[in-house]
Each structure stands twice: as C-alpha cells, then as structure tokens.
Image (cartoon, rainbow, N blue to C red; front, side, top):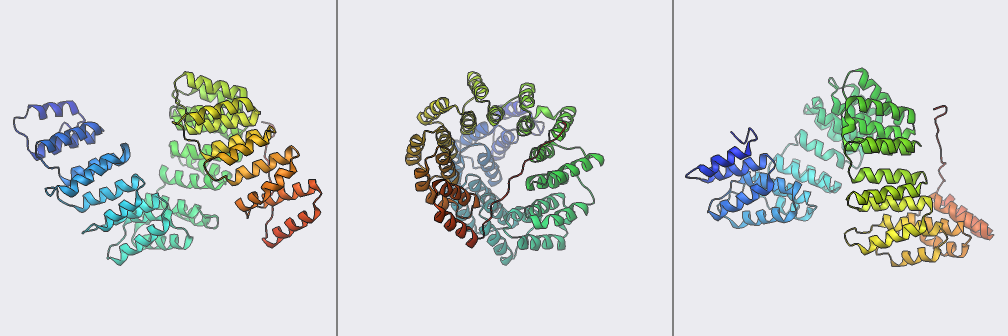
Length: 506
C-alpha cells in the first residue's frame, strides 16, 4: 500500500518493525524501491535478502534487470544473470529470459542477447518481439526481418507491438507494405501508435509520401502523437512548407502541440531559413510555457543562428531558465557560424568558469568557431589541451576541424603531419578540405598528390571530380581535364547546383 502511495519511508518503517519476514516481504520491499526509482537501495536490499537465504521471484529479478539496462552499467545485470544460472531455486521463466534479452541489447551486446534467446526453452510473442526490437534498435535490419519470418514459421502471430518494432527495419518499401497489409487484415489500423509508425516508415521514402498522407487523412482520431509524427516526417524530409502548413492545420483543429511537435516545427523553420516563421513559433512557445524545456530552448538558439539572427540566439540563451552542455555548445556554434570567433571563445571560457564539464561535442563546436574565424593559435592550443586530456576521446570530427583550420591558414605541412599521425582513417571531408586548401594557397603539387586519395574516398561524388578539374586547369593540364570529364561521363555523374534563400523585407 505504501509503495503505491509512493511513501517509501513508511514502507521501510513497516518492513523494519516486522518480527518475521518471508520471501514475499523481501520481494515487496525491493519492488517498492524499484517502483519509486531507488535502484541502488533495491540492489542493497536484494543483497541482504540473499545473505539471509531467501530467493527472489523471477518477476522481481526481471524488473531489476530492466532498470539496470536503463540506468547502470552492464556489470550489475551480468551478475544477476550469473546468479540466475547457478541458483536452482530461481524459476527459469520466459519473462525473466526476455528481460535478459532486452538488457543485453540495451548494453549493445547483440551476440549475447541472441545466445540467450536461442537458449530459451520456451518462447512467446513477447520474447520474439524483444529480439526483433533489439535488432532494429542496433540497426541489424536483415536479422530483424529474418526473426519476424522465423517467428511466424514457429507458429507465433506478430502482434501490434511486434509490427511497430519491425517497421523501422524495412529496408525496402515492399516489406513495409507487406507489414501494413498484415496490420490492416488484423485490425491494427485503428491503433494510433501503429499509424504513427507507418507514417514514419512511408515518409522515409520520397516516393511514398502520398501513402503517409492517406494514412493520416484516413485516421478517425488525430491526437498529438499522430500530428507530431506527420509533421516531424515532413520536416526530416526537408519539406518545410508542408510541415508548417500541417502545424497550422493542427492548431486550427485545436490540438495542442507538445515539445516533440515544436522541435519538429523549429527544425522546419531552420530548413526553410524563415526567421518570420521562427519568431512566430518562438512566441507560441513562450505563450505555452515550453521555454522551460531545455531541448526546446536549445533548438531555438540553433534556429536563430541558422536564420541569420545571432542576437536572437544570444537573447534566447540568456532567457533560458535552465541550461545544459548542449545549450552552451549551440551558442558557441552560433557565434562560430557567424564568424565571431572571439565571442565564441569568451562563451567557452565563461562556461568553464561556471563548472560545466567539457565534452566532445563542445570541443567540436569551439574548434569549428576557431576555424570559421581563422583563430589558428587558439585552435592549436585547445586541440593540444584536449589531446593531453584522456577524459575527452578525440574523434574524426576533431581532427577534421583542426586539419581544415591549419590548411585554410596556409600551414599545410602541419595539417599533413596531423593527417599522418591521426589514429583513424581520414574521411572524405578531410581529403576534400586539404585539397581545397592546397588550391587556395597555390600548392598544386600537393593537391595533385592528394587527389587520388580524394577520389578513392568518395568515387561517386561529382564535386570531387569538379575540384580535381579546377586544379588541372590551374596547372594547365588540359589532358587531365579531358580524362576527368570522360570519367564523370562514364559514371554519369553531374554536379548538383547550390541554392540560397533569403527573406526580403523582414
């Protein structure tokens, strides 16, 4: 009773004053801790329970393992798994085994999850759904589809949750349509969550957007989840006009948006480069009080920066009631995007003074700001500091920023030195930035040396061939230009045009 009233203190007092405790008593107390979010206390009680010779129920252990997968390292869940294997008193239930499958997937250990599943003597719809969902979450899409077929071959019918789990794994529209047809035949069309999953799946493919609209228009009851799904799908596809039109329609039908909806709408304003629409959405967010949600505030900072209003980014940041590391990173990136490197560094050092811990994303933001503003000395100092700090693992993005910064400033030998010593394979972006820097500073000898690496890194990118053409032209290698042009024709490569958009009179 006290557990259901969220009164853990009173439950603990009753537990402590009981003259005799049995297995049910201990299980109830541990469940009380778990239900109210006290995982460490639950684990301590579980330890005490075993020291006194009591065994936990499989349902309780499944609940503990589920919480370990979300909040703690994998070692606790693995210890409990070992305990279940060696303790004959614990009933080996399908519910507990399914919890272990889900746990190992959450710990990114797919091989062990599959071994646990294969070792299960009894399987049901829930365990099959867990394995399909785990494979999908880890992007093992072929395995997920194969598991769905195996599930049906073993005589189990996929339920609504199974279909929702497998829809993101549909690598081809054909599979998605098959699952849609199966769901329609079994009456899952009326489920909002299934409709949302279908909309997301169809919006993933440009030629199937009309099917997503048909599902949406055919829904009898459109809740905020369904609206958010269709708006978010169009926003991700880059069709900002349609996303904003749907948002207006949603408001006209008096459906209140949530933070997920507003994040999708803000993203649409960014893609549309529309400060007018962005300001209108900001006003609506203030009216509803969503500015108190940190992720929404962070999105607004980014929106103002991408739409050309740096002052809007700064004011939004200052007005936010709570900030996280993403807030600081986004503001630093905003200053960097507008070439205000000095201000970006000021924000960076202010952040450090306030005790906000530097992470990998923040380091990318400040290095990019130095790159945009040409602050070579400051960028080198920060990169060396980060290299000496083992707490921040340097990724390929950090090396790309540093190589581009050195290359743009003419320090090509230093850039090449970093290229030679970096612990990972250079990306296409690194080769492209280096070749561009060589062209910028007239070092066509180095550019020609690096050109084959650039082409090999992205053989189907027409922009790389165009860059190589320009270098050959500068060197007067007309035969080289003919060879590059012929290669592009053979591979049917065409350089995409770039477009810019501005809002006039705003």
